[in-house]
Image (cartoon, rainbow, N blue to C red; front, side, top):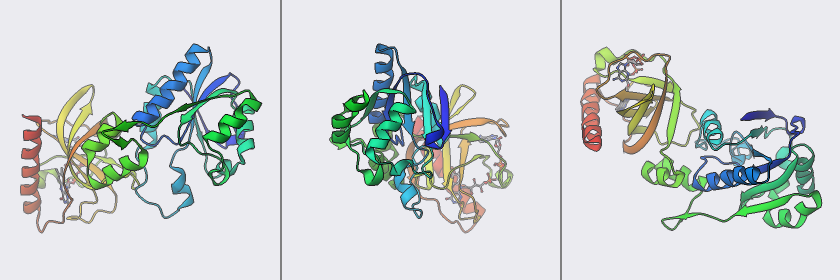
Length: 306
Ligand SMILES: Cc1cc2nc3c(=O)[nH]c(=O)nc-3n(C[C@H](O)[C@H](O)[C@H](O)COP(=O)(O)O)c2cc1C
Ligand SMILES: Nc1ncnc2c1ncn2[C@@H]1O[C@H](COP(=O)(O)OP(=O)(O)O)[C@@H](O)[C@H]1O
């Protein structure tokens, strides 16, 4: 997969493309249908598949005070899109006027810069200045540019409409199980293990720490998780937040891997979130924190039946 990023008017693709359009935060079940649709259409018509998207949701660009808006960190978004067999991934900057393009210039851009033959999007896709462009506009006007439009209908799961905003709500309220169902995969984070406060010897539990974006829409607290390291997966327990007991400044994701004793500093780990257990709390002493973590570990052992 070739990745383009930056100013929209500096991006050019020579080959003819089928382009999936959307913000695709979460790359949930519905998003994957759209992207897989573009890949399939490209194969059938001997074209190249592309995804035109952004690194963060458009509303976070308009509302500079927005927090906790992001489902996927960017490397994970890229990884999932790549796994779907896409040829070109285009991350357009939100800062340089792209989202304010009048609808006809948007179509012109798709044709002249990105060589679009077919565009694929979801039923509620909007684009351009003040979201003036919608599916109706595309259907009526794309023909002038020799572009075919394929629209995917909404997807329901347990009578709920699968959407990024519903998944954000689930993750922010601790309902990881429902978020995982709607995503169609278990929510995960990935990162390089860094050095922390080196409290394991005092606390009795080693924790592998990775830095997380402060705007990830994942509720702070303790989770039952599955940690992947070097091709193996291990039951684990993870705290995400600011360690109020120690008044830490940085948001950290700390994982104690059960029945595991290895130095994994600087190694990449992947943490899959299975179940939210409790809020992060300020404890009066390390001893109190320690006995609560023992309880958390018991809960994880019961969950994994180990
Ligand atoms: C399962 C688990 C639960 C935790 N719960 C809390 C908590 O409620 N409050 C808190 O301040 N820190 C909590 N922590 C974080 C610990 O304070 C932190 O892991 C410890 O200070 C070690 O930090 P270090 O890895 O930087 O040395 C938890 C850690 C784990 C692994
Ligand atoms: N069961 C385990 N779970 C997580 N990390 C472990 C485990 N056993 C050993 N480690 C190692 O110990 C390190 C964490 O030790 P810790 O004293 O908590 O230090 P730090 O504060 O630097 O994270 C991890 O980064 C990892 O290399």
